[in-house]
Length: 486
Image (cartoon, rainbow, N blue to C red; front, side):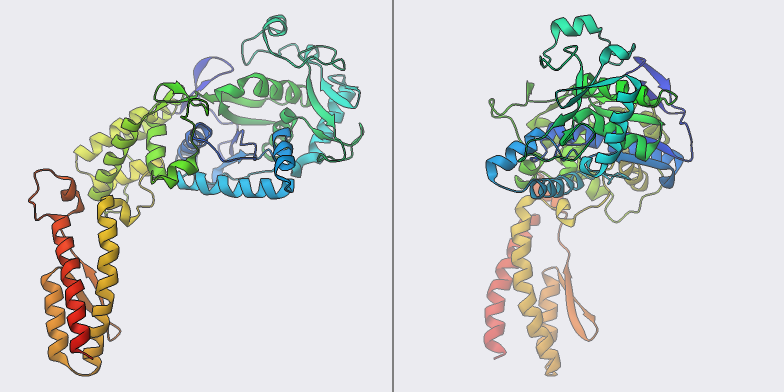
């Protein structure tokens, strides 16, 4: 039984999907005008992990996950005006960046990734319906939702209208009946993106897009709506209000889930503090996406997450250790305790604790399967198993061995088997093993475990020493062979 904390009821509840054959989840996606920072990545990783759990429990083909792209927004307009670029070029480029960065974090693509501009028709239809029902009104080219027409407004965030009017920063405009009324449609000038509507040329407000897309792709009632805690009000509050009024016989989302915010070394991420960085920045600095994912999952999603250099380093050591241990071992079955931890309101911190225990028990197949349920140890890059200082030496080895191997193959083709055997035997002595494939030699090398390079107690003539010896010998031997075989 999965239990999830429901923001709407402020309690942890047994999760009972509306239809076990089609479990449905909607998560608010990015506004696509710039690179995603690490805080933006947290909900992506959190709800990707929930997506994986739901697929494991109910079956991969029985879960529908929708995450939208907001590609019409004043921030996008401002960037286009600043750079003199076409809006579509900016949004297409940013979506491509987003996919590249989130793929690097090991996240699965959602079932649907709708763009807001593809759903203008459904948004206009929903707005017209709200106007017809008296839940929205037209004023000076704007269409606004009348918050006083929905009695439960504020229930999700636990706020009262009178308190919000007094304490919130809201847009004061003459065309509003109430300061808390929010925009469903607004007029566009000639240099702004816009579409024809019953209220004139304009574009949708932010909140209406998620309601229209969720209704179209998931139906009048669906199981889970997720996003960052900062979206609870006003975005999610407004979504509920307009959806409940547009489709009063539907439930919209049964369970509302919100992840807490991210800090850096105990402080709020901010450009002014110099601690602001994107996922792309970290990838360029050589931080693997799997390390980022591990750190993000090491804290429960409803607790503030603190990104630190120490956590990053510890995550890298742990993942390298696990990857070397499970190298070449296929996944078996996830551990029941990992499933139990994730089923308990997505307790990824507890699940990782169980992974440490499985490693101690030396069950590589179960470790890999359990880690993969968290999106870890899915695709292991061979370079991930080697210390960074070895990678340059590895490239040098390849550059030196290949020409020698050509000489070996040339010697065999000339039936100079004595020279060929001498080259082969010398290579073998140094850990390079030529093997005959399709009448030609290819090769692999076998050296000490790269982990020894980090072992302070390892012999001085350890892994790196052997690698350097091979590279040095090959460098000299190549010169001699080239002269001898001319």
